[in-house]
Amino acid sequence: MSEIKFSKDHEWVKLDGDTATIGITPYAQEQLGDVVFVELPDVGKMIEQGKQLATVESVKAASEVYAPVSGEVIEVNSALTDAPATVNEDALGKGWFAKMKVADKGQLSALMDEAAYQKYVEGLH
Amino acid sequence: MGTNESTENLKRTPLYDLHVELGGKMVPFAGYEMPVQYPMGILTEHQHTRSGAGLFDVSHMGQIRLRGESFAQVASALERLCPADFLSLAPGQQRYSFFTNNAAGILDDLMVTRAGKGDDADYLLMVVNASCKEQDLSHLQANLNNRCEVEPMFERALLALQGPRAAAVMQKIAPDSVNMKFMTGGPLNVGGMDCFVTRSGYTGEDGFEVSVADGEADNLARKLLGDMEVKPIGLGARDSLRLEAGLCLYGNDISETTNPVEASLVWAMQKRRREQGGFPGAGIVQRQLTEGPPRKRVGILPDGKAPARAHTEIANEHGEAIGEVTSGGFGPTVGGPVAMGYVRADLAPIGTRLQLMVRGKAMPAKVAAMPFVPHRYHR
Figure 1: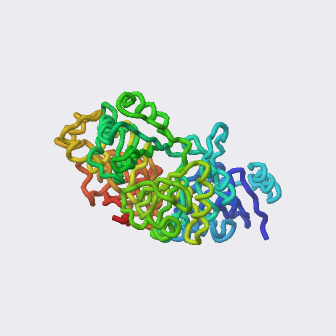
Figure 2 (figure 1 turned 135 degrees about the horizontal axis):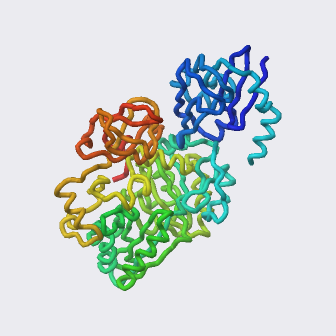
Figure 3 (figure 1 turned 135 degrees about the vertical axis):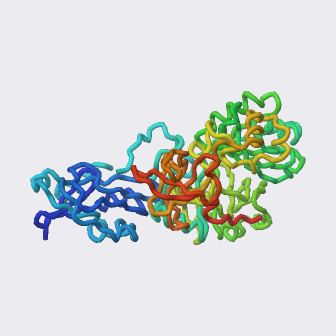
């Protein structure tokens, strides 16, 4: 099983070869509340680390989802268009947003592992 | 994600402890710490209010009493500041109105109830917005002090019970509530407590607003929540419910920079007042009634699924900017995005094609009739 890494902006990324699957964390979906709309990037788009990858909207507000690594968008989870609540129900699984072809795998080492992210989230309260 | 505004200097309503106990997510709102949602979540809270009964704490809103030697004296005093006809209010009747300024801008919107029946209790009770209440009080004092008594009751609590099951729930602890009609109110014993109850609300559903002494608010709220049909509802669902009902939010949809004619609130200015004037900005209101306003508040339905939030630019079919969204979001009962905003008057007819500029992309939309969800008031 591939290792999962987390960003300070509450995105997760799982690397398989040079393909990174990206989503938002259970903490993020909890903070957002009921997700009612997801805007996904176009396949083929190049996105730099820290730049906007997607938009996620709850009943209350719109929030940006940032790319935790740089790369090209090679696939998006279009199932979220019709079932945005999947983000709430299974943030780390079926609620993934996009897959990117990673340009520099070294960028992942700067992200947090599960234990470090857990600690980071606890520090936010 | 999520804002961490300071909670210093924020006020709390008498129900604060109850909100925390119920798992309410407390956020700063109009100077108060208020629950934006409970563990049930905004979507479920919204749907519960449309199918059952929801309990809202609206104690942050300002309650003000106007008293004088006679009802006519109090009513005519308030008519100097608002374009509504208060003189014709029957005992127990309630009316929606707003304070206007000399440019016909809206200073705040409010609910006004004639409390008595020509007796000692024949005064006007007002409920004003939390964020405006201090300013409203000064406004009333500065302009009406020599005409009537202006008595703030800001410590008093206000609970709203809303939804198709609200009447059945209320009837159990306040049997006389069954006879009340929409937009009427009066003193009522609710569960052994002396309250002032109106049959009104801000959701488009049947329901009640219950004014109660601060010391009894917690007791009353627990009594209502003791009914299996009642769930606590936060500010998040309050906003999506009122938006679907086409009701204005002060500060978003109406403000000092919008007048009642362009805000499509002509219905709240009764004929005698429209004709006679006698309120701040009456000349402008009368001119716009004759000539038509240059812009109008309308309902907007996006074709797609992306919500268009407040301040989204509205363009016509040719891409020319012609207005702005003032409230918008996802309507849980509609099952899609809904919005309201101001458009150039020639583009206000229902069905007119528009474009909403959401994150740099033009999203097709159309002018739609409001409310988006039919009102179910008990008339």
